[in-house]
Amino acid sequence: MSALERYRPYAPVVWAENIPAVYALKALHEGTADAGQQRLALDYIVHVIAKRFDLPYFPDSDRDSAFAAGKLFVGEQILKLIHLKADDIEQAIQAQRKR
Image 1 (tube, rainbow, N blue to C red):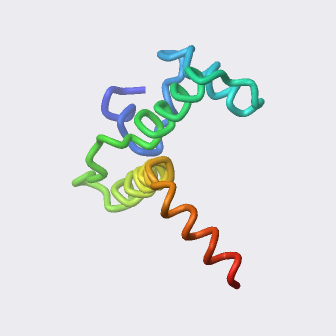
Image 2 (image 1 turned 180 degrees about the vertical axis):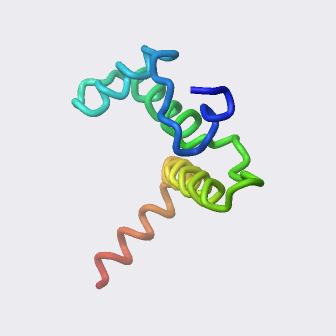
Image 3 (image 1 turned 90 degrees about the vertical axis):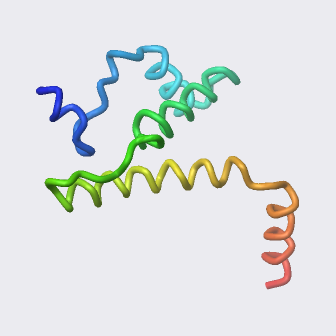
């Protein structure tokens, strides 16, 4: 895979560069991840897989830009949920109970 192809949004993750993150994801899936592995797995998902800090724009391809924006959206939604305030969660629970 060329250097340019590696950064295309549809390129597979180069997992062999971060074996601890792979094991953390496996442990998270199995329900056996410790606190450090949980943080590592989420960080890997948001920053490496969803490319949280990358610009989702590819000047030569609208489709690549759309694909990258979709990945970024997933990462943003995960972060949004992680950073919800407890009061907001409780308000949502109360609203659900009223229905």
